[in-house]
Image 1 (tube, one colour):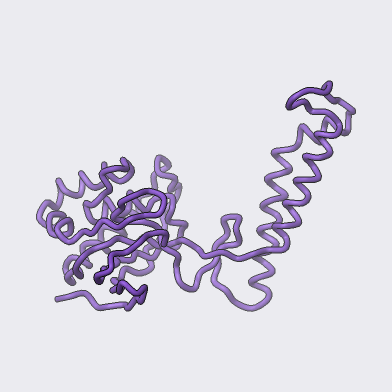
Image 2 (cartoon, helix red, strand yellow):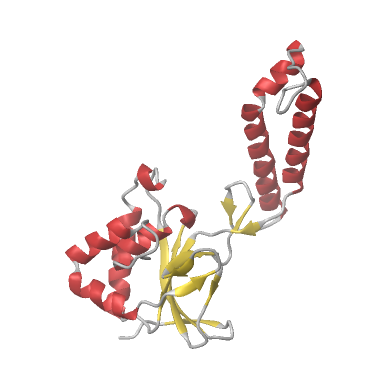
Length: 233
């Protein structure tokens, strides 16, 4: 996570999903807890609805919420989190590491994704080369040299994708608190998260339902140590 945690113990509520969480982490956090970052409007509508429907529970969760400093966004109460045991191929395909065939499939998908991108993006460049249809020299002109350079750069990016480097898969959402949640609060968050996941919305880049795989709490020490804990009764 790109955040700096306080020196004192911090409790991280983690929601693991089966989808890239960067498309919805603020809205899910707002819907599930009623907590959103005042500096960012994403998730505010969901948080306000949660407060109207469950004022006492939201008040309890907000009383425990802990803003932390994000390296890019300032003070935040939630962020995406890398999911242990999951990787992505750099082109949107998330997978669980396995034998050589799994890595080869991820590599092939990354390369094909780059091929598909350049096929669409540079169709006009290939047409110009095929038809000798070039523009006169000038800033931004599609000269023969510019067309050839563009396709050479595209081929180089395809080859780089084919060499394949795996990256962490961010399929989890992390929310920060200064004390652990109770069993009842955890159950509330899980139920609300599952409701959110079952209701796709193109407005927030969720075009089909996804799954909540786990909801758990981690105690993070100022030293960077993380320990999974059971919710308080």
